[in-house]
Length: 289
Image (cartoon, rainbow, N blue to C red):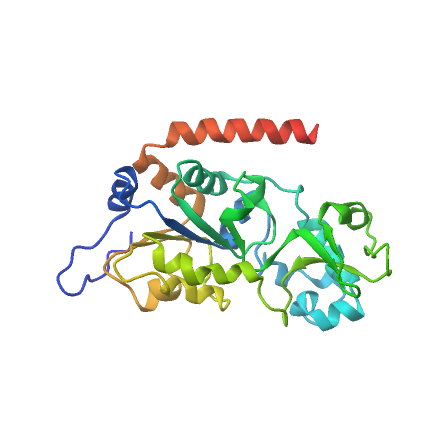
């Protein structure tokens, strides 16, 4: 765990200390920043990993360059590649994993102030985290909008067309209906600006499974007050954990799910996690059958 020089003689925080703060309910307003690393254990490839990431495997989509698949201008000319990718990523194809259910347990215990996610896979919702606790910073498949008349649609209305390989069109004006995923060149969802009130009031920050490379999301890691502990559970040191550490930063590096399991052990929540996962998996099995 990241035990860099404390500076000023202050004691370096550990993961065990953070677990103690949560157990004693000294931290009750937890903000979480999550990235693709919490979804890769569910089988969803991230975007940027060399060789395995989506951007490395886009030849099948017949696009001029990888980022084109998420560019609004390109989508307006040729929406087919995006919907080929959407068929793969659409909610319902994958299931939440241990990391998602840990965040759900934080919510169940009344500790989760807000979960900010870069992911568009909807696995936080599938894990049972209510939409009012979520900020889907890069958008969601849960809703969609006609690109011409701007009518709104539930994301489920598009499922039939997307799974059949068709481009969904508006029943009113015949314009292409686009899931409310944030493309390059689009503004972030209005809910993203909840960070203006959430981060100053947070008393603990978890950063889980993200490279902290995409702005403005990445900058949020520096938005909590300096006395607030920040916990990175990630494959590598990233962002301010790498170049602007605080004495109360903790880094649990390596496999993300193993890192979360370690924290759950320290919290004494292993039994509760097991019961929650069994319950939720049974619900998903019933839904699938």
